[in-house]
Length: 106
Image 1 (tube, rainbow, N blue to C red):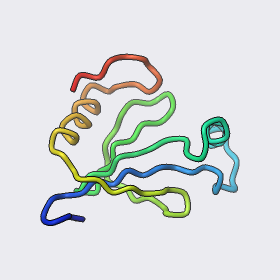
Image 2 (cartoon, rainbow, N blue to C red):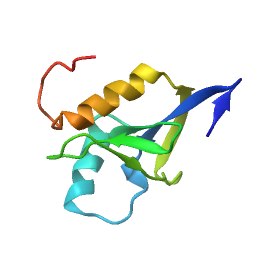
Image 3 (cartoon, rainbow, N blue to C red):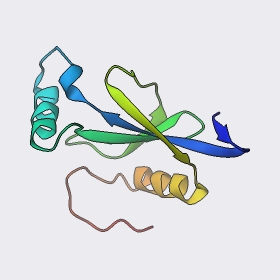
Image 4 (cartoon, rainbow, N blue to C red):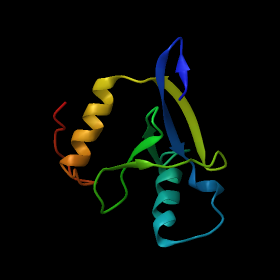
């Protein structure tokens, strides 16, 4: 677990699809998004436990342990707040869908 003076840290991972040489229908959309609003197309939030809060097109918010390839992701480290993890878990439990414009209850 990464810490800053004994405070846990979260990592925000920004995905850069331009580095992906394989073209699939999924990453085609990512590449278009990154062209329209460069350089990233989406972001994932990783908590000190290694769990990451993720969402994909036509999917719902999910949480699971994963790793991130630095060839495709740029990281920014922030202090982890318990309420941020709680909010992420509530979105997983609520099965919040991607692309639906709703207000998220904090």
